[in-house]
Image (cartoon, rainbow, N blue to C red; front, side, top):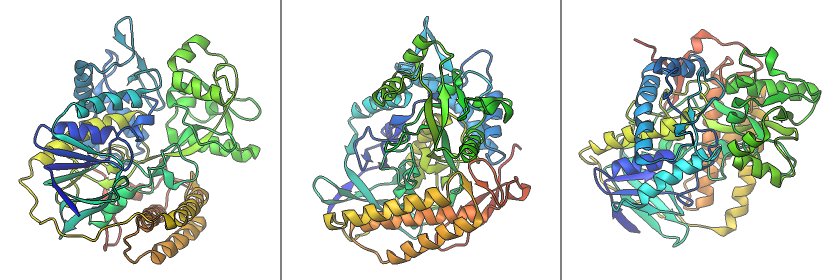
Length: 525
């Protein structure tokens, strides 16, 4: 087994991972390990933009207020304060480094999205912000000599002993070789897990392996019950749930039911720009009323030329499906999009496992609460990616040795077995742990997930078995947290407990070999 030594190992190459690696490179040698190519991540597909206070009519206090309101009482105030305050600095750094945000007459163009009280969304390439921003940071990383990328290499184990992390074990899909990466610190930036649902906007790599491995090495997880369903994903038979950005509604698009009527105007004062949980729930209700698989997004009343230019990627993708977004009604329905919870972290990305840090969608920083405010996610990647790298650099070194581990192997004979279980779990989650939940259906899901977990409990050297075990474990943890939260709040809506309950204004923490526990929210001092 090959053994390599670095100061910091970053797992994942989305915006959080690239940011963490770039800042960490100032303090030593860095490895980025990713199971696909460096440019495959949720960040790459982010269309909306990045939220930051830059306009004269805006203020940090307003951005904090909007974030707290979207989070439905579950945000930790100190984390939101860090996000908003340092977010301005990180965005200014990007501008100073030459990040090409969209401009008009020399001024950066600011967009509006659901839940925001001001125009504060910076975008690039119209609706290609994630791609442009990730490419920008990718160039910085590739130009940095002491960052070494390992593409098509899956991390299969975070190596720890007694709660102390000393590195990771990787499996190369190219050489089929196992690699041990020793490090003073490991930064987990593996993104979300929404591909555990059958209808999702995420790439197929987003199955929560990183979170499952963090749990396995003793790290605390928080708020896993909150899964954000994006309200407006393309709904065409036989096609993936292509994301249609929140920014489309920010520019004035309407949501229409099957009778051609706007329905959000009677639901929320912000109508189509209500927080995502409200819009997704309302769309779901309209679909139930009409017995249909979608509602419609309409831009017919908007300026055609502006829409074509502002949403170039969406316009082209829809045209390939035979839809002119400026003239035709666009069928949309909610799809699993963003994991609000994750590996619990402090304000510097530190976890309960010494030497393990986390940032980006994989992290539960306390910023998102019960429902992420649109376009805060890319900002969170920048702010906490930098913080995690700097805290990691201050570690003197691992206080535990890099122990020998058993190698993993790629086994084509179990490829179909993996696909069968992944698809079964994805349908199970969509049917029983989707937008609207009910205790009895969740019990059914949990029972089956526990059966699968028990079936694959014995440790195996087969990578496909490893993936089945991880998906079953993470979905079991989501289900347990959802059953414990006997209320409806943000991205967790229960038919049997339809109201918010003040006693559940807590984080639900899960840790291996310990019972779940409730931890109070950190309010403003």
